[in-house]
Structures are given as C-alpha cells and as structure tokens.
Image 1 (tube, rainbow, N blue to C red):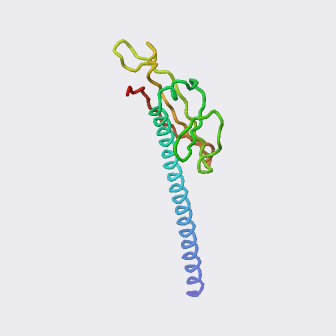
Image 2: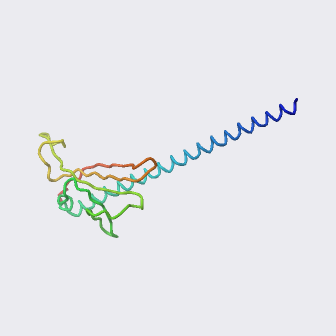
Image 3: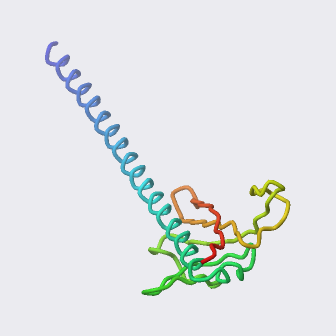
Length: 154
C-alpha cells in the first residue's frame, strides 16, 4: 500500500513542477516581448526627434524652407552626409521598420499674442508634427511628436 501511495506523490510533484516550468516560461516570454516592444517604442521616439531636428535644421538654413511647405501635406525627412531635405516622396522605411511623416500647420495668435486655435495667422511660425508608425503585434503603432518652429531673425 505504501508503494502505490509514493507513486501518486511522485506524479503529483511532477505535475506541479511541469506546471511551474510552463508558467515561468510564459512569464519569461511575455517579459521579453514587453522589453522588445519598449525598445522599439524608444527607437520610434528617437526617429521622431530626428525628424524634428531635420525641420529645425531646414529652418536654420532659411525660413522659406519651412514657409514654402504645403500645409497639411505629408513630408518625408531624408538626409545626405551634410544636409536634410523634406520631400513629398516616401523614401522607404527608416531602419527598415519605421515610416516618418512631417506635417506643418498654420499658427494663430490671439489678441494677447498667445498661440490659439483661431485669431491672426502668425506667418513667422509653424506647428510641426512628426508621426512615426510601425507594424507591431496586434496592429500598427504610432508615436507622435509636436512642436513649434519660429522664424528667428539673424
């Protein structure tokens, strides 16, 4: 009778051990996936910041580089060894993963000269939005960065 009871105990212990191993491997897989996704999101933020720096560099080269852009049109930032350009033609994915779009909007000011949704247009300012999208588990994800560019007299 003791032999049968010992065999049942061994089977129960093995079942518990196997269940624990599967649970730990599932938690590990989830953690690795979460870490990987956070890394991709961090890189998306860097790609967006790079797009903003491209817009700033173009502004620094001359305000007409910004003021001449079509409001609301999606531009794509690309770089050469020395310069940035904004083109309406999509050059492909950044790092083979991300699509980066740069759009410009008009800026309006209220009577107190604060930025507002309506009022007098400030032709020496543009709202710039950089949108970075990528394919992720469960669908597409987007990282958005918004700032303002001003014509800085030299």
